[in-house]
Every structure is written in C-alpha cells, then in structure tokens.
Length: 265
Image 1 (cartoon, rainbow, N blue to C red):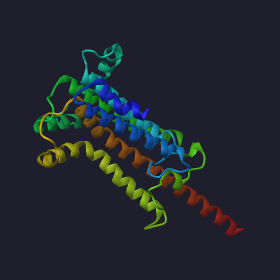
Image 2 (cartoon, rainbow, N blue to C red; image 1 turned 30 degrees about the vertical axis):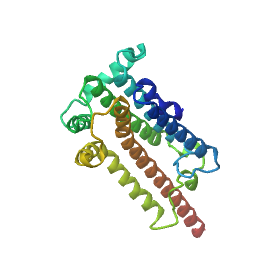
Image 3 (spheres, helix red, strand yellow; image 1 turned 180 degrees about the vertical axis):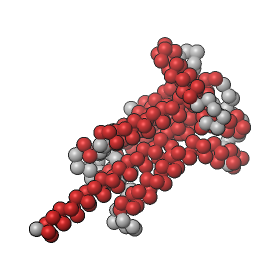
Image 4 (spheres, rainbow, N blue to C red; image 1 turned 45 degrees about the vertical axis):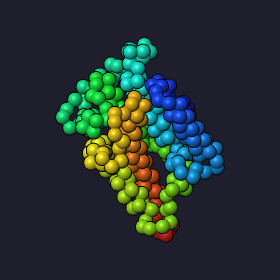
C-alpha cells in the first residue's frame, strides 16, 4: 500500500525523464521496506504507536486520500474517472466553500505558491488544497472522537509505553507525565500553527532553499500532501500523548488509593 501511494502521483501525471521515474520507484521501495521492517520486528525502532491501532492507519489513510484526491484533481482532471466527477468534485467544492475566507490556511498556501512563482492559481488547484485541509481536519476530529468516546487505546488491552513510543525515554528528565503533557502541548501548538506558518516561512526562505521555476503536477501534489499531513500528524500525536499521560495519572491514582486502603487497614 505504501509503495502504491508513493508511485500514484507519477502514474497519474507521468512527466520528466526516465531518471525521475527511477527516483520515484527507489523512494517507494525504500518507504515500503521501512514500513515492512517496522511492523515485522518484535518492536518498532522509530514508528510510534505501532501496537495501538488505528493511529497509524488513520495517518496513512489521510495521506492516501490526500495524495489520490490531489492527483485526480490536478494531474488529469479531464481524463479523471467517473467517480471523481460524481463524488470527489462535490466534496472538494464544499470544502472550498468552507474555507472561502481571506486568511484561511488553503488561501495562504495558494498565495504563497503564486507569490513564489511555483504554481499557477487554478480552480483545480484550489479544490485540491481545500479538500486536503478538510481531510486533515476530519481525520484529527475522528481520532479525537476515538480517544474521547471509545477510550483509545485502553480498550485494546494493556498499553506498553516502551513498545509504542520507541523514541521516548521515560527514565530521563522530569516526571514522565509532565514530559508527556509538555510534549503534547508543543505538538498541539505546532499542529495548529503549521498550516499558517509553513507558507510564510517558505516564502521567507524562497530565495535560499526553493528551486526556481514552476512546480510540475507531481511537485504540487506532494507539496499539498506535506502541507496538510504534517500538521495532522502533530495534532494526532498531541492527542495521543495527552491520552497516555492521562492513563498514567489514572493508574497512579488507583495505586495510591489502594495503598491508602491497605495502610488504613
């Protein structure tokens, strides 16, 4: 699945020399092997919440939806399959109407593309950006509902902190609950701010790191995907870390209450 999503924009908008196609295949293979190794081993080395579905499934599903939708809307709208006309365009148009206000994140992203000369403002591009941001917000809301209404991840059984947070060392620094809460707040602030800050930061650094010339369809697709999915990952991580901190606090309170009962007896 990861391999398919990585190569999908290249299949939808084939362009450039053969070396570009080889680079896409190489990148897709590396991504697929990385995910395979992370999920096949006894414990993940980098991927968080591997044993707490559907955290990573939601992130991958959102990235896949954004990539496919942007490819269908930008790359070849004239030759798009009927499903794009029947379902994709109405949803994209509703998303565009929802974010049709001056300083909305989709408009800031499009203004940055136009000001940097990287993309031409078209109706298809605006629909793709608005739909990508709507998918990101909807996925974050869905995960929040899973946490609040369905008790993720407690309903899955015992939650192992070391297996699900391989890059987090709970034995160093301050109290683990305080570290989880502070990290969650930082991720929440970044997740909310990045859709607004990323275009401005990129525009400030346009002359330093961004290549000159107009982006092609594949570059636009991946730019939209990165801009919409990166804040989503931070928001979901903030919600997840906050939930884990709450679970640890609850377990501590029960342990203290049990110890108090035994001491009183």
